[in-house]
Each structure stands twice: as C-alpha cells, then as structure tokens.
Length: 146
Ligand SMILES: CC(C)(COP(=O)(O)OP(=O)(O)OC[C@H]1O[C@@H](n2cnc3c(N)ncnc32)[C@H](O)[C@@H]1OP(=O)(O)O)[C@@H](O)C(=O)NCCC(=O)NCCS
Image 1 (cartoon, rainbow, N blue to C red):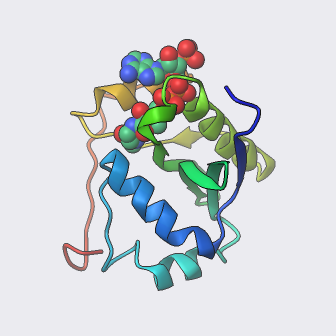
Image 2: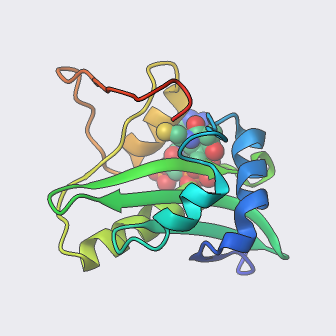
C-alpha cells in the first residue's frame, strides 16, 4: 500500500467526492434522505459520528462511516475505489474506524452486509468478523427515501 494514502476525517467540502465514490462503487445512496448534504452536515457534528476518508493525491479513493450507540459500534458504507482494491486499504479503513470505537470504550463492532455482497462478506470475515445467520434485519422507515 502506497505511503501517500492518508486516512483522515471527512470534511463537508469532501461531500461531492464522497457521493462520487459511493456511486462509483455501487453503494446505495439516498440523496433525499440520510445522504443529503444538510443531513450529513448535521450528522458529522454528533460525537458518535466517525466519518473517515482515504485520500491519495488530493483524490478521495476510500471511505468508511462508523457510529456507535453507547453499547455497540457500527461500520457502514465501506468503499474503496476500483483501482485501489486488494491492497489492504479496506482493512486499513475498517481498523481506523475500529480504533475510534475502541477509544470510545466500544467492545463490539457490527456491520450489516447484503446477502449478495459476497466480496464484502469475505473482507469482513478476513478482518475478524463473525457471520450471524440466525439474525434477520428489520427496519421501519418514514418513507423509501430516508
Ligand atoms: C469491500 C471493499 C471496500 C474492500 O476493499 P479492499 O481495499 O479491496 O480490501 P482489502 O484489500 O483491504 O482486503 C481486506 C481483506 O479482504 C480480502 N479480500 C479483498 N477482496 C476480496 C475479494 N474480492 N474476495 C475475497 N477476499 C477479498 C483481502 O485478501 C484481505 O484479506 P487479508 O488481509 O487477510 O489478505 C471493496 O471491495 C469495495 O469498495 N466494494 C464495493 C463497496 C462495498 O460493497 N462495500 C461494503 C458494503 S457492506
């Protein structure tokens, strides 16, 4: 992995680059909901928000969003740009988010991965996560855009 890749906190100026990365890697993006710029501007002010980006030559090439609820930490939206995969950057981003969670006293870290996303499942397994086949994800949404 190149020494020139830096992992740092997301800034609101990175918003368009982050959206571009999500689109590039095919992650679902909710522009009218939780991913609207004003929603993210509010979210990053929360003490529980962990928004990290990986930067190389002034370009955002990776990102991860973490959070915690006081009991458990969550890793969301892990993304590495196609040309930078398979070199350990995804692992670095996971570990950077885990480090922040550990500093906050969190000892369980979880993530939700769609059934079809076998690559992500393999990556999290390699990074020490266990799969729970006995848990089903339920959610209640105000509308489809949130
Ligand atoms: C998931 C993703 C972030 C992985 O990024 P990456 O930089 O390629 O991952 P790394 O190189 O750090 O790999 C971490 C580990 O997973 C393994 N791995 C990576 N890609 C893999 C693949 N396609 N199949 C199997 N294992 C893989 C690596 O071998 C490595 O294990 P090791 O350290 O024991 O060798 C990237 O594929 C991506 O952006 N995917 C699209 C977005 C997505 O699905 N995100 C997850 C949402 S839950």
